[in-house]
Image (cartoon, rainbow, N blue to C red):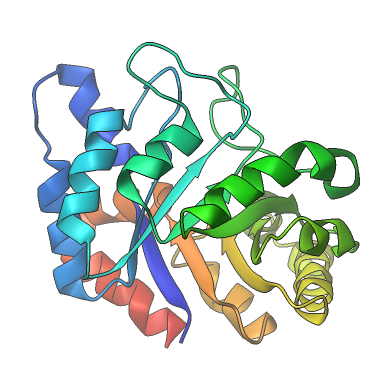
Length: 247
């Protein structure tokens, strides 16, 4: 079964908008775990617009031995303020998986993947650093990527397909080409020996079609849509609905 990792960034956005500790990341994570999710995802950024380093540390304690812990981030972003850098943070908390994403402060959200041919040599020592501390390493890639030799060469174990364009095409009723690009990318990655994750704008509406098209899909990381839907249906009920789609 495809693992559901719930991204808690939006809980942190809401908390930070008011200050204090509510809504509670710990309670949100606990609720998702009790509802059956297989993992929790966070994406700490140097500008700390949502998840903060202390959140990462707190969740590491809460999740250890229970579900997978996936930390997303830009490996090239340096330390800033209390943000120590992605590799330094990973050394502290030892997540199950690190998903490397080429994002910057100017992006509202992640909106593109790595160019593996161009970026592999820069990524290589960082991938090695994460592997040395026991993290599984996944690289964020665009649908349509077909050359995965560079990812294999530098030691990546998974790729995460950026599904934003697929979700947009699905909403507009023209899903064919966008889904085909995802399917081909997944097929090529699996042929190269990489497991395939997916994430970004996946929802209850479009997830079933995506899952059915990609045999062996290892994991989906879902936050924005899931938290939005949970405002109406409740967090535990929404997590269970996603699990039913993935089953």
